[in-house]
Image (cartoon, rainbow, N blue to C red; front, side):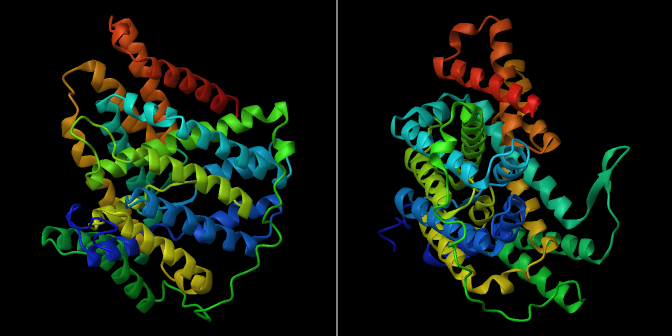
Length: 431
């Protein structure tokens, strides 16, 4: 394993990678339950969706770990599954079979763009200030999610958000956050995982965690949804917009996550180039195509990978561990469900802190960099969308460049990105 994953070269070891892979799995295991819940509203078989979700996550994560040797994890994307259900099926009246066809076509198109090197050129054309802002913005975004899952912040009709009641789950979550912080200060490996486990155990002792009736179950059959996609129906001209929307959201959600996690894992060259991004993007595209065949919405790279990276993961070995755990989850889904949201929430907050610390590299004295970077960061949590933050960041960068006389410094790729950003903003407004 040391030779296969180049552990020594990446300053890691087997134990650290295993802990990182387990941490990543625990922070994103919620998708096993949330994805089937959302997609089942289209009429798809919910038990089959549990199996499809686990298999798609395992396949994508194992592929990116073995092919690209990076500590990333993949699974059906949140937001993309909502677009699948509430826009395509329930909004536009498509059958779930045709919607799966749309996912398949967008995945194939993505793969072609990746092999042609277009996706990689898009990433490399993004200014350094926006790359760093993307990482910081996602850090704010997942911190917001963590505090929301913990119950510390709640919705408020007058102020949008406000502090929640300091009930037992919130107090347990805050205690776990403090524990992880102290362990980090003491350089204890696996601090995030320890915090998650401690919060779960304490929650069980106080009756806040419901123990399952059985720990093991037989995986549900895929037969009701596997290979049921309608590709010909998806190729109709009227669905071109839907295919484009899937591609755009996946493109910028994936890029944002890959850039952020790559910086955190130290997989960035001195000139700002992301190492092995071509292979990561290829794995992302293949996983999307495979997921559509299995019967689930677009598979994408998960920002929760940053939790394992924060615990020391640096190579694809951690991804292999995460992938194997998703396969094991097929048999232990009831047991995984024991880990509550208030136990994983502190991990997201800590990861947000880690992802925000590179903000010092942005030149805030230069308004051409400062304003687009700030808008990128702040709009991700405020709009609850990574892609929206990126879209506004790109457009503001181009507009400021044009109006300040720096139009010649803008690359052709950035012009294309700006055009796509404008289209995405228009599509979002329409929906």
